[in-house]
Image (cartoon, rainbow, N blue to C red; front, side, top):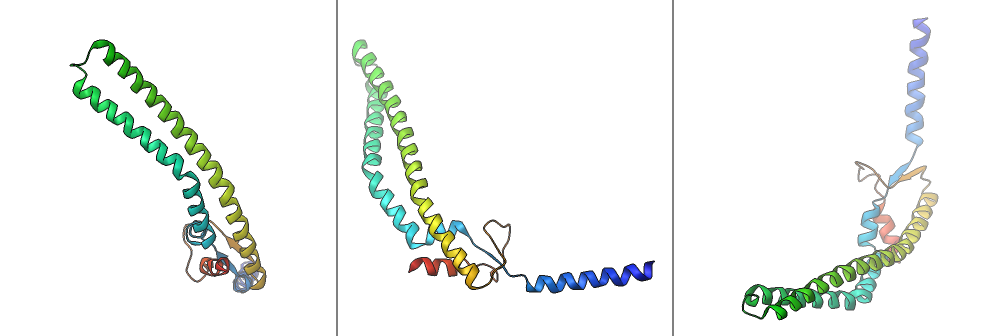
Length: 163
């Protein structure tokens, strides 16, 4: 029985190794695609322009709140009680408004980033499929703990996305 199983097992191992040599797979670093592709860089610039005014307004409000807080810390004991109380309420209101505005800003920015990067992702997927079909890949993965440069096709995808 052992004389039959050993050659059979050895034959299976050899046929598995032969099949593995015919198997072609690749790896794509999607994070690099989202950072380095011209399309992604264009999206980043577009969003920076779109949201720069809001960001500047928030920074201006933060600066005003800090100035008021500094004023209260330095002069709080020397100004009349009614003025100090009014300024403290004003600071509290400013702080709430700033937090609300910052939260809304982040939500709007995240929503727009998701919309814009979805287009980048769709284009990258098409390019990856084209490369996979053209070069006869059996499998392309996006997430890996380690990928040898030999199987990394990220550069090829980036070159096609530059066109």
